[in-house]
Amino acid sequence: MKAFNLTPVAVVHSPYKEKFGIPRQPQLAPDVEASVELVAPFSRPEALSGLAQASHIWLQFIFHQTIDKGWKPTVRPPRLGGNKRLGVFATRATHRPNALGLSVVKLLRVEQTPVPRLIISGCDLLDGTPVLDIKPYIPYVDSVAEATHAFAEAEPQKIAVHISPPASQQCEEFYREKGIDLTELLGQILSQDPKPAYQTFDAERVYGMRLFDKNIQWQYQLTDGQWLINVTAITAQD
Ligand code: SAM
Image (cartoon, rainbow, N blue to C red; front, side, top):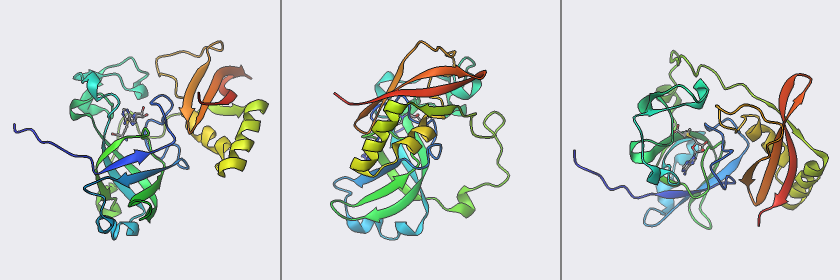
């Protein structure tokens, strides 16, 4: 088959500064905002004209951070506990031929300055992700009422998130500085339980992710017979 050369039309600017901790699908952390900025030679204001009529859009993008790792014909999806193998085309895994991703995100608004860009929410995209195409989500064709999926019928089970007093203080400071409710966002992001699906709960281990310009640290804690996430520290990134 002939090979095709594709050039990104846009780049994502998102608060997710590393792969770990990003929700496994868009909409799982619905209030996390990001922008999709058109890049030359596609950064033409008129290319976005009319798009604001759609409430949601499709983004086709490259898993650029893992593309060099190649692909395998089978992968272990987190929804199956991370131990059972399935064909790569039966999953939404990142390591796949052509490293192409597809996400539906909410379109909050279209802006033209400083560059033509889209402000979106509910994305599962790393900062710097190259976008190959943008299309409106059209409910009557894209939403299939009778569609089913045997093992991913509903959202994965969530875990409770507790913000410790020192972390809570940092959230308040962040709100004062940026007007962003980090407590709410951490609740949405971490309730997806970012640890790998095959890992068991370990109360000693300290986990961390980079979000905005902060390092977020947490530990798993057994409380009244239930595991929860306790955000222990929020510090500035070095
Ligand atoms: N919704 C898309 C899809 O179905 O094609 C992506 C699903 S994929 C399971 C989502 C994960 O991809 C995120 O949790 C994050 O770990 C990873 N990811 C996001 N952006 C990436 C990028 N630019 N490069 C590599 N991995 C990325």
